[in-house]
Image (cartoon, rainbow, N blue to C red):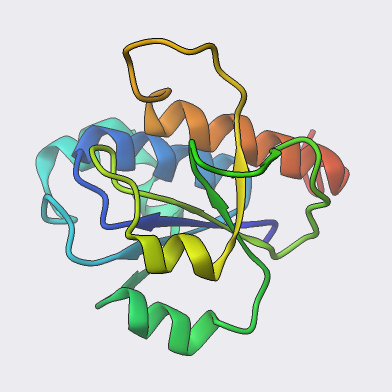
Length: 153
């Protein structure tokens, strides 16, 4: 497994489906932290992930606390518009965790404080941020580039 992609309380099934597809094709594990804005067997999630679901390494956590109890000692980056360093300025290692917040509201302040924040540079505009599935792909591929695209052609 190359990376751990963590979605904190995802709300939009199509984003999660697209991210699942990215995880399969990058040999990364997808972690979903409840509550979610959809059921994992939702038709829209499955459609967005196409026929990749059977190959997905997936772990569902009942809460942020449950996730932290299991993985709190691991390196966890938080991709956020309020992050400090740009995503390409940090050093990723195989097995790192990269967490992404809810589409509409990100993560609570205590989650922000608990993790190293990274961000994708963007111009100032009235929109909040890039689409979640695009953000995951951008950051994941930089991390994969840094670790040499293991097992990837």
